[in-house]
Image (tube, rainbow, N blue to C red; front, top):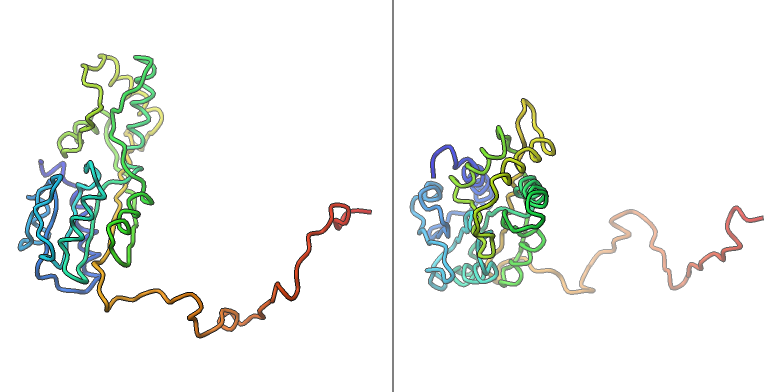
Amino acid sequence: MSDDARFLHDEAMSEVQERLQDVNRTFTAPAIVTDFPKIWQELMPDARIVPMAEVLDLDAGDHDLVLHAMSLHWADDPVGQVVQCRRALQPDGLFLSVAFGGATLQELRAALAEAETRVTGGLSPRVAPMAEIREMGGLLQRAGLALPVADSFRKIVTYSNAIALMHDLRAMGEGNALAGRHRAIPPRALFPTAAAIYAESFPAEQNRIQATFEFVFLTGWAPHESQQKPLRPGAATSRLADALSTTEFDEAANPVHDRPDDESPNSK
């Protein structure tokens, strides 16, 4: 990957670094799962780099931090990826993932779909679908991680045109890798038509176009007895009414009845 094409990784790396600083813990046995080892090794030179694969080269309980870096959105089995990372963590170890989310390239997806409908009368998956934050957040609980948190932010990038955007995606290693993609040579008019639709529908200043990239961050901890746990129902020691300085209303003692239709305030 060229230096010009890695700017999104730099953005993700900066966000990850801030999150690790907020944790305020020194990690002595980190591992990074990624398809981009040269970039992410810069974040933690001493971390063990693990290539993305169906079966990750991780041993159980070996690491106090496992970072899944900009690769989870390409996984055939994202649940399996997070489960394997969870197994590799020591008790109270941290799992942190950054990957592209569902809003990524929403403009390109729409422009290509409309262009293909016009040119061929049909559709094929030209841009790989990416999971929404709610779906990705659910991976943490399914993997058995404690204190799960999922958050995201969007970055708007401008390009001279859609063709320049697609060239940049290829340079980033973010081309269409779907097994079900259309493998025939596309009609010559497809991409120029898509570029024209893109420019008309998603313009930016100075005759450029905008492209959305959504970064989704997942954070969870390997369970440990020292971690905070939710109280059992009924275990509260103070009343919500006292905290809000208000009077508690007993609905059972003072039931509210629906007003009959013919007794509305405006009826005569």
